[in-house]
Length: 85
Image (tube, rainbow, N blue to C red; front, top):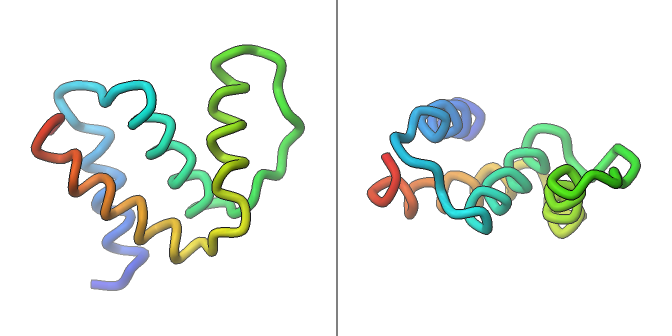
């Protein structure tokens, strides 16, 4: 299975977890997902609190290649799987 296929499969499974990860875990997954699918931040910093937290989490991943972000996302999701799936 290619990295892209594995990433998509894991991302789809995360969306179907029974319980929601903690805010910090969720932000980490979100930021890795955005870095993996889009790359470095390409939007202006929002002022709304939740959007700003997501933005800052994504900015913290700046410079990570999309493939490395996919690998890190997969690793993190697999570690959290037993806790939330």
